[in-house]
Image (cartoon, rainbow, N blue to C red; front, side, top):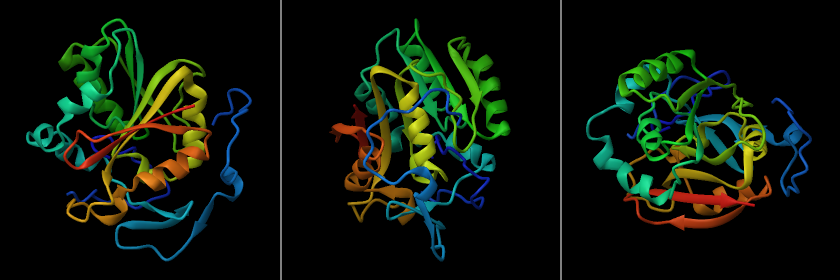
Length: 247
């Protein structure tokens, strides 16, 4: 995940992205997809896949903490135009943002500067990434960034606390997207948004492995199963969708 691989490694093989639940409350979401008990099937894994299939999509292999240097590469900001993404999110100074699959915090800390009266909840499931986040929090003097160690099914976010949950090149690697999605929906405040930033699978010229890209149609199908609808597909990034969902 970009930076933001959510590193769901307990069910997946350690791999490069190759660019290059708690039931804290009853879930009353009106969903249209399979329940979590029957959501997944298996197949022979593709080169960059895991063999675990959700709603017709094979879940991708993940990038572990050994890829931290790649997440912090100097050319990344220009390649992915993270400045444009930050503008597209239209954050308010008091917003609470959950950066899911935060990795080293490459995007967490720029967001923290935009929400000085709010906070960034930087979630990852690898303890090594939490160590990176804590070190970078001190380096960036960012008291409004809170690293959180989540699990493959639960980001450990309290209900009704989050204005925006962001996943940058991460969602396609979630080993349990149904359970994680349900937990994220529960964490949203009324009017809260979920944003997926994913490389465009519709574009054959995007130089990313097949299972590390996603079409708008597939993302819409999976978010619809959580009771969400597409509010906007912002086209401003050179190679990635910015898919903004809400209720």
